[in-house]
Structures are given as C-alpha cells and as structure tokens.
Length: 284
Image 1 (cartoon, rainbow, N blue to C red):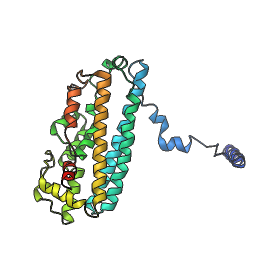
Image 2: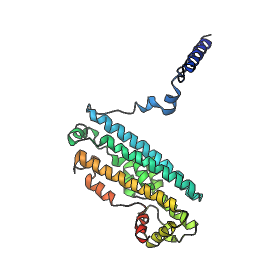
Image 3: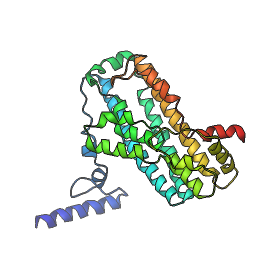
Image 4: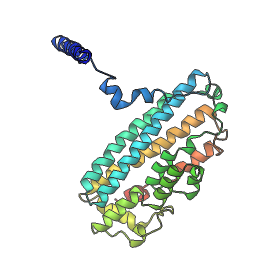
C-alpha cells in the first residue's frame, strides 16, 4: 500500500506540474540529471588544502582542464580510427569538433587571469611538489599531438595504469602520423621513412612532406588540412596562455614540480606540431 500511495502522490505531482506547464517535479530518488552527471561525486572532489579563498578557483579550473584533456584524448583516438578506416570526412568532423573543445579549454585560463603572486603564494607552498607538469592526461594529449619524450613518462612509474597508457601512447603513431599514413594510402608521395619510423622519436620535418601538403591544399582533402591547422593554432594558444598565467602568478620562480618554470614553458612553445602544415604555406 505504501508504494502505491507514493506512486499516486508522484502521479498527482506530475499531473499538477503538467497542468501548470512546469517540468516534472516528483522523482522516486535523486533526479535523473544528478544521476547522469554524477553531481554528488563531482562536487565532493574539491578538497582544498588551505583556507585561502583563491585556492578553490585554482582547483576547480585545474579539474575542468583535466576533464577536457580526457575528452580530447578520446576524440583524437576516434579520429585516428577513422583515418585508419580511410574515412577522411568523419575524421575531419571529429578534429573540427576538438578545435571547439580546445577553445573552451583555453577559455578556462580566464578563471585564473586575476591570480596575483600574493594570492598564489597563500596556497602554493601547501601544494608541495604537485604540478600540472605531472598530469598524465595532459602528457597523453601531447603525445597524441606528436610532442613525445620517454623521460616524461617516468614520473608515473608508480601508477601502473597511467604508466602503461603513456608507454603505449609513446610507441604508437601520433595523430599526425595517422594523417601522413592516410595520405600515403591515398596515393600522395609521402616517403616511407615518414610513416615507417620509430614513433617514440621526435618527428623531423621533411621537404617532401611539405610538398605533399601544398598538393593537398589544391584538392578535396583541404578541409582536413585546415582542421589540423586550426587545432595546431589552438594548441599554441594553450601554451601561450599557460605561459602568461605562470608569468602573472609567479614570475620566473622555479616550478613546484621541479622544472625551471617559465623557461621550461618558453622552450616548450618552440616545439611546433604538424610542422609542414605551416611551412607549406610559403610555397603556395
């Protein structure tokens, strides 16, 4: 009888809400929205280590970025599968979608653009050796974009799952490698050395690949080239905004994770992804 009475009460609430043009107001448990999004878990993840009011914004922004790293990884892996299936149209759509994800990711830096050295210093020491440099997901994102280094997976040796995933990503083709292999299968003059190589090694730009991109821009695959260029530009914007956030909040102090901080980021900015997409423009 109790369950029947509860159900009838819910039915009355639903009908009353419908008559008033309101959304459904009665549920047997948590709302479907909360169940789907996992809000109860999500909002328990902000565990600050100081009383500094600025720390919560720093932590939330960092967690939002981590979610976007995971999304980008999933999307680029999908794009690689689509390229492996020679479905350039689907891969182009996926890559274009990730350009929008990256725009949102880059916009997250605005949540920290106000952070002064005095404000950051209130909680920085309490973070210990924690540093964004240690993000396994960000490292995976960089590997997918072709910025690879075996040394950079070493901090994750005591996290077996993260270490395994990064070691596999290091040895596998990057997104750019997948694109070049696709172009080769389509009959473009991509040299064998550009696709049959040690994927863990840093990619070296080649004039013959540059010439292929000039050719691609005159044909039906130009949208794929443009999508990759947009993505490379967003990644450059990410690195620049990171650099400026660090410069604003801590100047040239050493990074909390042991890096040289600002100078490390400046060196990172000089490593271009998809290099021939940029140099080919001079030849068009």
